[in-house]
Image 1 (tube, rainbow, N blue to C red):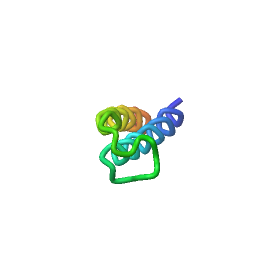
Image 2 (cartoon, rainbow, N blue to C red):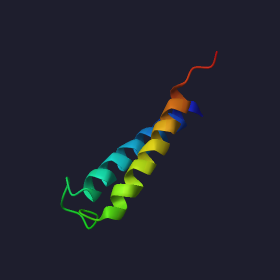
Image 3 (tube, one colour):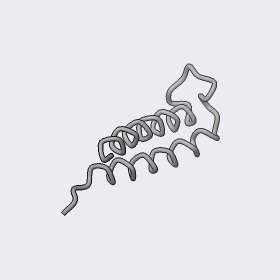
Image 4 (cartoon, helix red, strand yellow):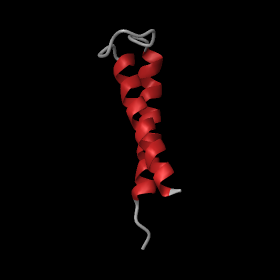
Length: 61
């Protein structure tokens, strides 16, 4: 179960970063480029991904 959280966390973190950069028009070539909504959704998804990643990577002790 922990490795699933890590994988989903990494994917969500990467998607959030890409969506943020597209929303800020740093990455072009998409319908999301320059759309401010993705500059808001992206960091939210990235933070959720980071939380999942840290939860999955945390050692039980």
